[in-house]
Length: 311
Image (cartoon, rainbow, N blue to C red; front, side, top):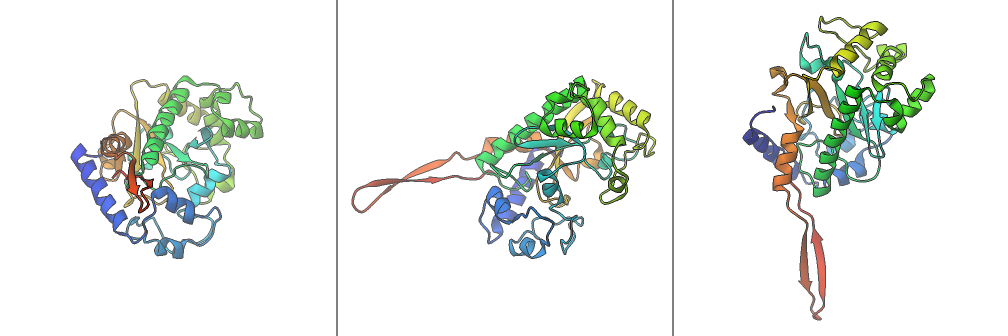
């Protein structure tokens, strides 16, 4: 999926060129930690000053970046309380997104409810804008761990594990809703969907869950539960982890999309890339940290550590 290995390689090389041509030499983590705000403030000037307009070129990124809903919305959501958490640990949250989950699978697709996203939520450690951009070794390892966690969550949903095994954010949300921690995560998933407040459902980005007939069933508790159980119990479906390129995504924190599908639809192959292919390429091309020995005038030797980034 996402084209041949050579296409993935070509696309990663292209974005490396775009990223490295900027007169801003921070790694993704360094730049993200330095410039991305935790509050819903105007990000327009910062975005332009760090030459990100030539990197993130999607029409979905609207300037000026004003108000509480802009391209940093997802990051701010991670810092507080996301609406439909399905798993969390000390570093990541796996959630079912608002808006119209599964929209890009195309009309009539039966697996829209399987749409998950994994996002970093801590202010510590590596964090990326997008996996198509160059990565440090620690950022590559962070990508590998996110893919492992996403697969773990698909397994928990398939097995309908008790929600107390799904992390603190899920437990906290269950406590708020008066749900026992021994309840199955699929049952709680269905309940969170049908219990969304009306202002969330009709606000921005809103929420719709379309069934295979294209009907929004988000308010129908029976229909939602049936869809959740049918999709996550279907062993013929395969979990995939995909990311939109900077030319197609609207949010500036990396958010890997997971789906359970028989195969990735053709309509997604121009805008999404398989994260396993990205990881394979980056691990194969990652340059290890190099330690240079510097000879001083007085004969003393000092070491200088240089970390090289993968494409």
